[in-house]
Length: 282
Image (cartoon, rainbow, N blue to C red; front, side, top):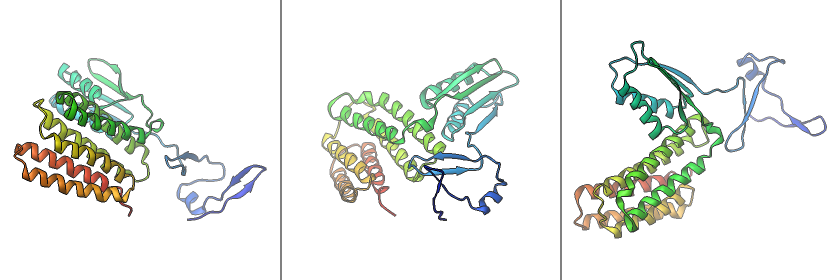
């Protein structure tokens, strides 16, 4: 729907809110509404102040420690602001350690604010709306570029540590998208996922600490840089990224590399191409 602005007072502008919307939200002339600005600069009008969700989890004493850690991770991803983890018979030490480990590794901003023998309170100390999705993506890009440098010029064993940092920024970026719901949210979800998968495959290849097939990795590095440009709408780079994938796959088929290495390299090239194609205008 469209509404025209009109002058209000000496320097302000105003608009008329549709009656149908006010009736739907049970609003009258004295009610308060809330205004906020999206990442794209759009003005958002809401009948109520938006708050992030809070969840309370009751932990069964038989729950697996790994499952508990994963539970915390999922609530982090979905934007939960506060968790109360409670067990009437007491929380076993392995479960406490699993929770603390999960927060440290994958949940930047989550902090244990209270702990007793029966409960743990976790709260979010990072306001995602004050973060920048572009900065998070830029950091992920630089980390993957660092992984390429380690394979080509440094020590591939360092990629294991870099991958842990990639995971943290991937989790932060995913949480950001859930909390703020930016324009093209699905596109950014897919981008974050592809970057994380590229890093996962880099780690698999570097696990033995040996650098193999450098020529193909130089090609992959170039494809990655071109693919990022494609993601932001450069149509020529989208096309070039797909062409590079065909060339890389052809080189893989003609080489005598290990089957698992070949699979990981193929996956990296495929993920880069998918990442680029998210830049196609629909």
